[in-house]
Amino acid sequence: MEEKYQLADALSIYDDLNGSLVVLQGKTGKICRMSNSSNLIHILDYLQRPSTFKGVVASFPYLTEKSLHQALSRLISLGVVEKLNEQVRQIRCMLIGCGSIGSHVFKQLSMFPLKKMLLVDNDIVDETNIYRQDFYPEDIGLKKTAALLNRSSCIEETVFSNQRIMGPHDLVELIQAESINLVIQAADCPTTDDMARIVNKAGDYCNVPYIVNPGYIGNAMSLPEFFYPNLDYSYASSHLSIPGEPVLRFQKKQIELPFL
Image 1 (spheres, rainbow, N blue to C red):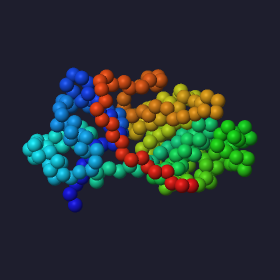
Image 2 (cartoon, rainbow, N blue to C red):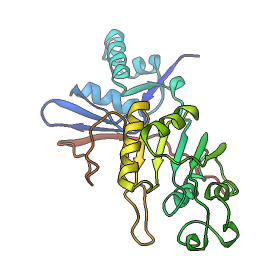
Image 3 (cartoon, helix red, strand yellow):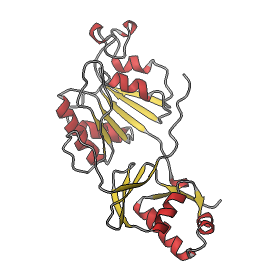
Image 4 (cartoon, helix red, strand yellow):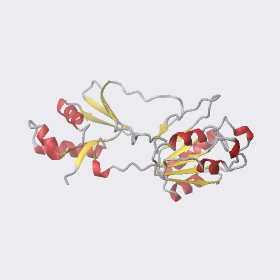
């Protein structure tokens, strides 16, 4: 079967108004620049749908096969285009902390068919946790990890660890042992700031993306910024702004939520 090609997932493409296209790659956090041309924009637009190389050639008869092959090879090397048979989106997530934030994060993520979820917490459910956290009276006295493991879930494999993470080395060992490729920090021990720094260092070392949580306000919480390993962050509240005009945004069809 002939290989098919498509734009990489979660792309935002801008015209910087200075002769270049700026591409923000959502899956890797990388930004690349390419010389702007109408032909390139048409090719990018066409590859929002899967296509074989023969299909690309047939759709652009005014371009030579050699030039199209070079353009496609360049786009693949930049990570802008992917071969469909190389795409694997199996998420093996570690959730650190199963309390005020973590228990609600787990409830939401449990509706997705993730490959694996590792719950990390050594606390026990008590009366003060009821209703503010996603626990019920019958959970009192159980480990928080055990209570969440009893819930119905679409996750293929859910496991737990009662280990206390006190430094980057502890976290690196867990990431490597469980083949984790996403870390979500929802714990405040030793402190929220300390845990964010631990996750930052371990994520950089293991080259794993991560989310850090500053805490919650009242009964409201959400997942904040998504961080990619080995880039510099101040953890200040900000949004990346790319000067220029948006040309194209591409995201694959989202995973459908099953009916529970």
